[in-house]
Each structure stands twice: as C-alpha cells, then as structure tokens.
Length: 429
Image 1 (cartoon, one colour):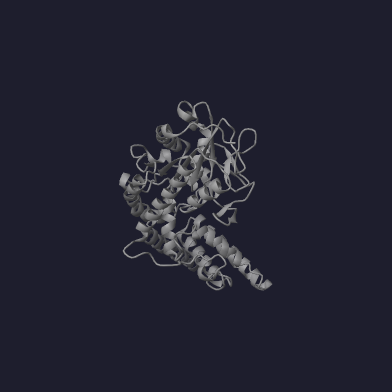
Image 2: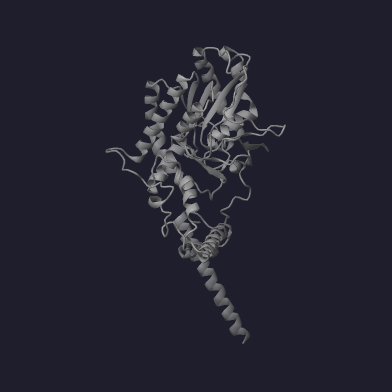
C-alpha cells in the first residue's frame, strides 16, 4: 500500500513538473523570456505620480487632471493640480503655483512648457532646480524672475499641445517663452490609435476613448443583475491579470491568464456587446477616414507633428513670445545604440517600432520647421555618449533629474541666443 502511494505521489509530481516545463517553454517561445521573475516591479517608479489615473473630460483638450489632485514626483517632491487641471510643484510652504490664466508681476518672465508626461517632468524638474534663472542674467530678461509653468499632461500628443496653447492664449494667458518638448507620444500613440482603428489625430484612445466607453458601461439602462455581473467579472479579470504577473510558476501564470480571459468573455457588458464600441459611443474615436494616398501612418504622424509645431510657433510670434521646439530623446531609438532595459520584464516592446519608424522622419520634417522659421533643437542624440540608465527613470521615456538637467544645459543657451530679437517687456499687467 505504501509503495503504491509513493508511486502515485511520484507520478503526480512528475506530471506537475512536466506541465510546468511545458508552460515555461510556451512562455519562453511566445514572449522570449523565462517566467520565473515577477512581472511587477517591486519598487514603484517615482514617475508613477505623473500617470493619468484621475482625470476629467475637457471640451477642447480631451482631458485634464481633477482640480486639487496631488501626486509624487522625483526626489521626494510632490505636485498639485490647479484650477485648470495642470500640475505644478508643491513648494516648502505647501503651496503650488498657480491658477491659470496666471497674471505675471512686472518683474516676472513666464515660461510655459507644453508636451506629454516628458513635458510635465521637464517643467517640474525646472521648478526644482530653478535653472532657467540663468536667462535673467543678461539680455532683455535681465534682472527678472523666471517663472516656469506647466501646461503638459501625461498622454498628450499633437494636436493637444497646439490646442492647449490656443486655448490659454484665448483666455488671456501671457507668455514670454513657450517650450514644446515632444516626439515620443506623437510616434507611439498616433500609431496605436491607427492600429486600434481609432482616429490617429484624437487623444490616446487607450485613455480618452477608454474612459468614455467605461462610463457607458455603467449605462442606467442596465438592470441591477447585469451591473452585478459586470462588476464581478471585471474585478475578477483584473485580479487574475495581476495574479498572473505576480506568479512565480509558469503553470500558474497561464492558468491565471486563462481565468482572466474567461471572466472577460463572460462579462455581459464588454464594449463589443453594448453601445460602447468605438463607432457607436458617446465618445466616438472610430477612424473617420483613410490616410491620404501614398502616405504611411509613420509619415502621417511626422507631418502632423511638424505642422502643429509650425502653428504653435506662429501663435507665439504673434503674441510676442519666443517659441522653442525640442525633440525629446528616447532610449529605444536604435540609431544611437542598443538600450539595456532596467527591468527585463518591461511592458514597452510595443514602442520600439514606432520610435524607430517615425524618429528618422521627424528629422526630415525638421526641414519644414527650419523653412518656417521655427526655433528647433533635435535632442535625440543628447545621451548618446553616456550611460542610458543614468538619464532615464524607467524603461519608457522619462528622465531623471540629471537627465533633465542635461536638457536644460542645451536649451538655455539657445533661448539666450533667440532672446536677442526680443523687445524688453515693460509690463505684463
């Protein structure tokens, strides 16, 4: 009897090991990695505070942050969203500047920063270091206080920066310097929208469109039982996805993934099953037209990027501000070498192709910027001769304080150069 029990136990153990080996082999073949490391970073990235997780819809910009929302930034600093839903650094006095439109004092020079999450980080890092105070040493801004204001939000891509500038100029915001730092979202999000059959010029469908469809999933026409079922399956699917990432064994990972798929299939309120799909939504993001003839989505993204910047430069010039466009560097740009990720289980494989398809086209489109008189700096190679990991805070695109300081070092001399054509301001009031 004991011998039979041992044989049964041995058989079960051998079966479990074989099943685990098959699952591990499947994951290795499909995802090119072994499954025995957690897919969730145990140390949350400081940049997580910039992710848009609590937003409100905006009639012109797609979305902004909820007023008063706070979050963490780098070096134990925090930010707070203002009356218009844009965030600035919280100072030692517990206050964050400022409600918009901000009326500058006579001795202030206003620098507005536009872009996505990289733009947000750029503005907040400038507020931390006060590096832009160098602009007040000589020239038309001599002796004046430099105030950097953030008009960037995570996920923003052109034409959201263009719309933001137009909107704030229209409601009376004055600028002396306008900095637009972008490129990554224009490449990646434009392509993702197109790939998901969403309008490529719209805000990120994974944010703006998904939030809208999520609201429609709670349509009052659904009865209480359907609501309960939807809530249950949605919650269990999310739990199973997280459990899959945390599981150390390949077999458990696949079983949790299968469970998540089952709950998603069983949910009675999936976008494909109700009036929440892209084409029939109150937040319609479905692609409105095909691309122009003889143009690829990559070329389309680069052209829209250039035209939006030219429009921003034109508005800046007409209002007496200096405009500077910065092409942000990205670690997945293979033209400057191979990047070694900080986390082997990073989720950014999908950004590699768009970055390497569109960034070379940005360089071609920069000729249009030059012809239009746009002040433009290609910063894509700024970290080429240094260790990538020193300048990036994660495996996506965001910079450490040291990385932003290097960008400041390139930006400030150029602004000083262009300031020679600026008429010294008399009063902003």
